[in-house]
Image (cartoon, rainbow, N blue to C red; front, side, top):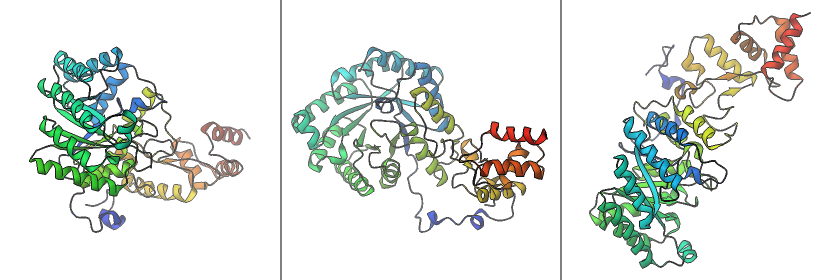
Length: 418
């Protein structure tokens, strides 16, 4: 492969240490992405429950960026939740979206029956994610024993399976649960017809070693049962490891990974769906998947949920592709001068902005050089005379911030008015 605009192969321009010693694909083909923005995302205490119209827009964007399944809520929690879930299911069928839907509920029959009703009324299969706490600490707080958990779980799974719905059995706090308890619960779920098991790092406890150990253990239980059952990974970010753990989970054998837009979720949030997709795309593991709508997906989620995106957030943040540093700006400008957009998009960026619907930006500030000013002026079709460039640069060097457009325009007016 050659880099556009040069005769050099891309490996000659970027030596990729990420590929040294790599053994084939990091993940198997056929993995699926499960979006929790409209369920776990709404459990964050600082967000607003969006209008249903915004939820519908998000579903369309999820479909465009290649999400396979969306958890669209807990219809048993309130009349509004029921109505919104029903409306979203109808939107998916009316517009023939490829996106499949799931709903969450406790392992309580009264949480499962609303899903059955919506599935029948909307004419769409709903995957039931039935959850219950499994760790010793949860058992103590809830005053549950293992037979109680087994009984409640079996009853809920049976209701969904009898209605013809697929069930994913979710053990909350899996990453702090005892192996003998998980073995009992997993075997019960498989025996009662669950088609998937969801391993939940509910409080963000796991490290990559924990992810490996738990997935290997789960797959051994499934193999021992002689079953064909999928494995989900659902991770939270309390240790700051949610993204890393999600990527490791895929390599270790999970075939479905969960995430939310911008990582919004309970407490400090979940694995960031857009960063999972971004990293897999850059690793060459999303063949043909167009992620140019990824920015739109994130921005809509932020707007609909009332979320402030940090300015330094990867991909989406205001400063993700912005520089005011003279050396950095000069390199980008020299690359552009060669007529090589590919080079300009990578010279000072490990993430090519154009691949995800953004572009490199050059600003003028206290660490800028003349090249920044020349670029800013030429972008606006203003002739960069030496007097003008020197005046703008002097103004920038005398401030403690990046100059806004209005500040630069004021200097231009002052110079031209002399």
